[in-house]
Length: 488
Image 1 (tube, rainbow, N blue to C red):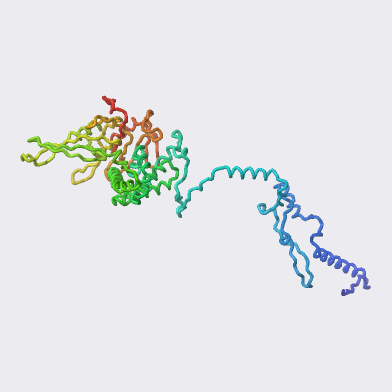
Image 2 (cartoon, rainbow, N blue to C red):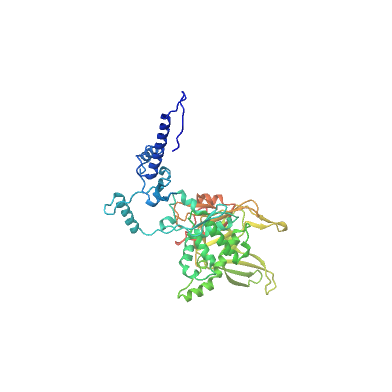
């Protein structure tokens, strides 16, 4: 060690100062060497950081010590002189990483209460029935959520309690692009419970041929009638409209259409599948009965009589609905009688007369009688206009036929709201499906697309006199009354 010569204030050499400097440097080197030799031999933690960590462990109930792997705790690092020593790895304060703290596992020989509770939960999971995975959904860039798999529900959840407001919110159908005419027709058809049941009962037949996409899409809508999935209903409506437009391209665009034309097209397409479905059912060893023909089709006899000689001819035709002319100040019963009374037509008879009389009568009565009121007519210069004449809507209707009298009850109304024929909105009114067809409380539902409200049948028959467009009368199983009640 190099010696320094220091001089005191009196000019003489002093050795005491040199000894003090050397002793201080020697003690500093010894302290550094001791810290390098062994880290584990360091005294108890007294630094501010460790004190702060211990306080946080007490407050948040964190473990005061963490177990770490020996290789992660220490590393063997070689020095420049060839000697190896152990250095402590840089640790992050564990109070910042609560989730990474590891605790020594407890031996299996001494089970703890936590382990007993976990075993009980595992046994309950094994006994419980397996849960079905939730429906897969797809989120589009515009944040629309569309279900790709129909939502599975238990039988108790398919029809919510009708006293619950959720029951009304689930019954409607959305209207994204001018499809109120589709929604109103679907709601009226779904009101006919027996008609829907007959289609469902023969699912094994129509599901076996690819041409019956209309039947499949219609039953998918019926199954999701009480669904809360708004966007899943939109996808079902799009599929139903695509199936109808495949057979009738008139409904392929997004423009407003006539509800009566759409309803006729749907029923005609279902009837067109009858030959193919009957062949398939015969191959399966069964029979197929068209739900449209068994519920909505009826026969009428049209008789033509010459006014001069009385000669005539008769022919029978099948119908799914009747179109009635509006008579100012009259009701549906009078309009139906006027339709059967007939009208004059030009026909050249063999006697030389050009005028004949045509009359119509019911040969058979359907289970559901669909009546179309002619609200739209052509004016001068072939301009289409809407007729706003009020029509009395009876809740009960008695219809004569060759098989006897038939009593019918009004179950659904499709109304056209609007002042002109080229614009407007379709709304459906129907009996509450939760109450069935026998409704002593006279509870009806008004389906204005996705918005559904409760109404009474008497109020609706009064309010829809100027807007009613299509009427659905369901035949009663019991014998009709001889004298219908007032207002019928």
